[in-house]
Image 1 (cartoon, rainbow, N blue to C red):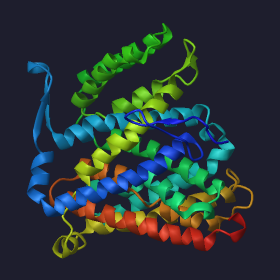
Image 2 (image 1 turned 180 degrees about the vertical axis):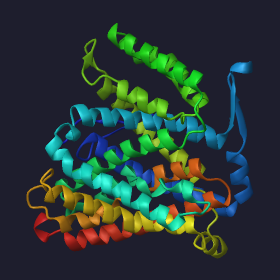
Image 3 (image 1 turned 180 degrees about the horizontal axis):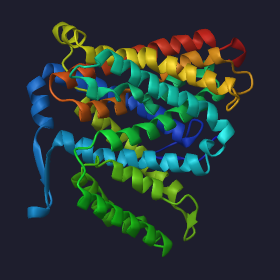
Image 4 (image 1 turned 90 degrees about the vertical axis):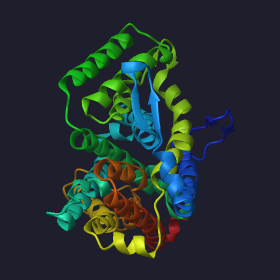
Length: 399
């Protein structure tokens, strides 16, 4: 059923939702994200030095020994993106407790497909880069960009029935869970037990505050900042603090107010229309000319990313779905056949936001540029190819 709540946009404007509020925001976010990516590419190619100098400007926050100094790029990736991952944590919590992931039978198919769509791309990347300097980027082709993927489906229009949209949305959410686990386990800088213990103590404090209960969200700002600092200093990526706080948010009413729903309504537009576009402005800028493209695709990293997203994603998703159906742990929606998932599976190869995020954690210098060119190339090809495949495989009776 469509969510009839009006969407509160950053700046106070409101928009009527197209279908569910979450999907509507993600669709519009995909359009804004595309615009921000184009701006980043134009600026990076027209004023390369100015672009690089700006995002590598150092900024110190705090007082004396209690301050942290990073360049603007890392403040975006380590700080601002914490809000993005907090909203992701809220959505995961909602889906697990009251959403589609609560029903094991209904969730089994997209969950199995998502696992295939993570494992096969990673395996392809490892096979292409085995023994090479780019092996650390194995997780880059694992993720699906929800905003871009849903925006592409919106452009496809009525040729994509609700059953396939729900499949893609659930698959992408499971992808997010996988990406969060991978980032936490494999892309840290070495664990500092003291800071990690401090983070655990902060989590306990938040749980106690919820039990009291402390109702006003503003009271959680201080422990939230403390948890972020602990995560940052512990070696676990700082954005994991956002995920943890999102997962700790209660789904039921507290003090007469729906905490999770209210926070998601308020923060999701800020995450989608401010945080993610700024992330794109900071990370998507890469010089694209004949020399840079030839240099990128002369290396194994680019081919690992492109083959992972364009081949590994659809093959893994289709294989995972087929196994789930064959073993009868999951079932296709009424009227949907496996071949109808082909276009959706290719659209899931749009990695972009999380792929760029992982690339920044895995690489620097030339390898990072190579990975960015490959991510942009594969995402565009997945969007175009997936759209055409949806139109070719979805029956006319669904129009």
